[in-house]
Image (tube, rainbow, N blue to C red):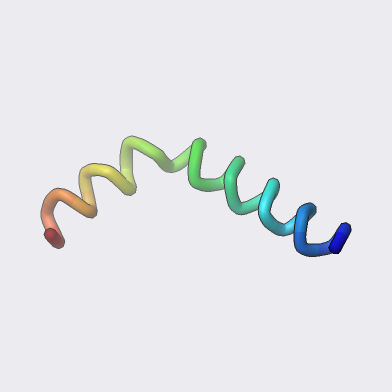
Length: 30
């Protein structure tokens, strides 16, 4: 459980850092 929560936090932080790039990529892909 703790490991899962830790991974979730890391992924959330990573996504937040790349929010602009991901949003632009998603717009082009979708």
